[in-house]
Amino acid sequence: MTDPDSPEYAAHVADGYAFEGEAIAIGALVQGEEATETAQVRLPLKMMNRHGLIAGATGTGKTRTLQVFAESLSDAGVPVFVTDIKGDLSGMALEGEQKDFIDKRAADIGQEWAPKAYPLEFYALGGIGKGVPLRTTVTDFGPLLMSKVLGLTDVQESAMGLIFHWADTNGLALLDLKDLRAVIQFLGSDEGKPELKDIGGVSSSTAGVLLREIANLQAQGADDFFGEPAFNTMDLLKTAPDGRGIISCLELPDLQDRPHLFSTFIMWLLADLFADLPEVGDPDKPRLVFFFDEAHLLFTDASKDFLTQVTQTVRLIRSKGVGVFFVTQTPRDVPADVLGQLGSRVQHALRAFTPDDAAAMKATARTFPHSPYDLEEVLTTMGIGEAAVTVLSDKGAPTPVAWTRLCAPRGSMDPAPEGVIDGIVKASPQAAAYGEVLDRESAYEKLAAKAAARSEAVQEAAEQAEKKADAPKSRSSRRDKSVVEQVVTSQPVKTFARQAGREVGRQIMRSLLGVLKR
Image (cartoon, rainbow, N blue to C red; front, side, top):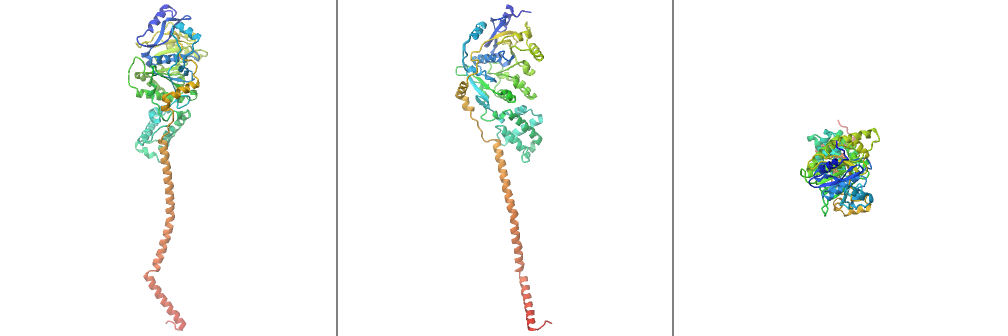
């Protein structure tokens, strides 16, 4: 087998990474202690929609590799979306600082380095962190996606569909989670159950499960994500006036405390883009590329439905011209079905401190194409800013595995000062469109008003009933008095009274006169 340090292997690598059409520079082949400038390692733009993985232990340079990819795509006019967990990527908005180690690396690999600032937009999930708030409505999220996020059974998913259908039919907008809760509570009540009687209904037990699962989602901070104004995902496909792709940077502070919110957002974002974008096949360059940093958080305790949804979306969304790159520590952080969809691999060094680490390293080495490297050794000896690379060529075939010294970013590698971020957000036209929260009348308010009207009607009916309960007594008394009066004043009674009076009078007179009746 060819020695990876030989001139023959350098020529093999140079030939394997010589593509027709545009490509982004990754770095140069490492042989011995030095980089081989003639063996440039690149990635064809037309293969970026075949997805990829950037992996490696903490401190090995994954985030800088992500930065190099994002900057190169922007220079090629491709919009980029990155999740910035630690705030390390915000510095791309500023020019990088020229330093000796950067100059040395650039000279070593043949990189023409110059400091450069890039067009950034900063976003935040529902305003959690600095950036333009990203929100969507419950209605736009839809019953199917909501059911998958909540991990519902088929029966519960069917009930969720009925709930959305009833709300839509009755003109009840589901804008946020309190709207959805209000509708479920109403349809589970005695008054609401007849509303769905003809189409199956929602049992009390099912309604209880839905409400509990929604409460769990709210505990992760989902109330900040659902609402208005709803973000139009097509706004991510924008370029700057100079033609460079805009890098949309989603700030995600404290994400480790709310992984479910992260996965909910990613599921919606990919599904929404997939629904809205037309089919384009394999364009010369992608329309948009995603980089999900700390991807293990995306899959932490993920439901089977969520994993299935992500796998299907990653598989299909490439035909829409969208690429997805996962950035994490080991390939084992990504489910096997998803990992199998990733065409490009940039594997930084791994550390084997435990038996589990050693097993992970062996598994990682086996996922690479056959090569002359002892990959288990290479993966433990590569330096910071170096990686084992293989990508898909412009013809769709895997390229030779190359121990690569990576290019240096042109933007700043330090987080941008808060004042810089605040200034960019304030000046962004997106802030005017999405910055202010809207809380228009929706299902919650309408059902609350309906309940208040029912309560008022019940109270009024009770008062009327009380009045009616008192009214018969007075009328009965009047009726009784009227009957007595009618009897006493009737003609027979009057005649009888006159006759009785005369008879009594005669008896009295006889008594007075001493004459007895015979």
